Image (cartoon, rainbow, N blue to C red):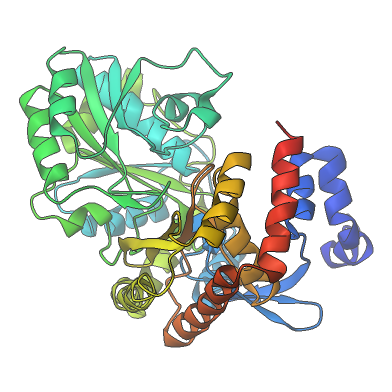
Length: 460
């Protein structure tokens, strides 16, 4: 019997966390965290909060980039994982059909009328890869369209439909894919006339910048795609599972019927890597057209018992606690209260989003003093002001947020779906104080801004 003891190992070596990453993992991560002052040590987490060794709470408005939709350590999901481990199931035999994958597929499909079958993988990017493969095989066409500024993952196929050059640089050649502007039906039809397009993959609300598809676009795009023999892929990896106030974000618009839908992130309550691709019957039957093709697309850990049990528990919690409705209600309150500040602060440009996916965009101020500081930041590197806001939210108010994308002056809020009025009050109060400091023209924020400028210039 091994004498491995996880608690003792963490007690003995947990303090080495940043040094271990610097030596053995991505060495730029600890460097970045040290530079921004984000090198905190969180001891535990529960719900929408982290706690440090002194017991101070930190409000999580990031949810692990959307993974922690239920918050941290939901007791129902924890119990489901204990139960499935204690059951000692004959998992991943490859030569049987366990009940949990079928039960989770059945439950997922109940939220998506018009879709018939599910493939389970291990992540969002794998869900997108599956959709790309299935669309190309089902249509017999090579090219996939994507929207400018999209993010669909970082493996080679999903990277091919990634709208951010910073992620693509140095990894060519990629798949034969083409960007079109989000909402531009004329540009979409221009590409479809070439008769080589398998599909359009689109986020109903783009994570980068938090831009929603214009009203009517998804429905009209689907009609155009089908007219030209192509498919609509809805990437709901971040927007799905209640995030925007409907179970799937494409459901905000009547008449949208995607051919394939990609799901991941919060599906397992944040515990186990899991991804899912939902699709039409005819697509699955074409891909898996014979017994010879039974394993033509598979995943070694796909449909594992832990992920399936966590997924079933997560969906049960969402139903029982009415988290989709909470996302709609709480998100509307948060967005409305933040939008009311736009006229008050000249550095605050716009507040947008759906449900608990909210973008706060900053812009060039009118007054001369603030404008000169803004220009100085923009000259060094676009996006520094948003980082200046994120920093005091953490350091002064113990609220964790994120800048929505590289070179963007946008903060994205994607908190756990369990947040309520207390969290809205706390965030709005903190944000108001940060904006007051920003418009005063001095203090911690602008001192930190000068540090960011020096760092940006040093890395050119």
